[in-house]
Amino acid sequence: MCNRPNFVSNIESHQDGVILTIRACPGARRNEVRYADDCLKVYVTQIPEKGKANEAIRKQLARSLNLRVSQVELLQGETSAQKKFLFRKVNREEFLEKIGKIE
Image (cartoon, rainbow, N blue to C red; front, side, top):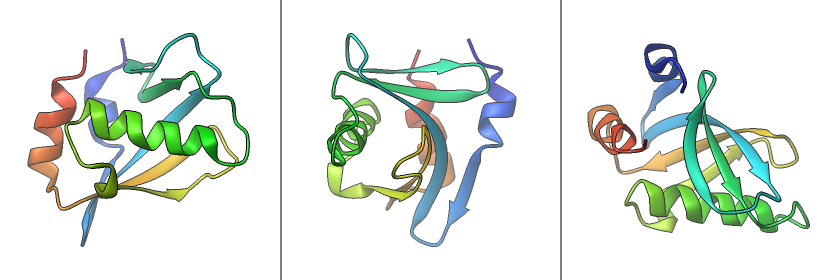
């Protein structure tokens, strides 16, 4: 389980919503989002091939946070395990509430 106070400091405000840095884990046995260390890890079964894993991560984040896929945008880290996502049309407080529901 991650240290949640440190995790909360990884959430940045943005004029269009909030930005969160996540750790991507493609090629996993199942799709899930969970806390680990000081970050949110997103596990997807899709292998990292031609952006397919990034799209699977985007969809998994949207599903786990009860957002539309169109609200989730990859900003940085297309070929890296560490990625920054913009979550549009959600403020910091709403985002913290949504992310708090993830076990």
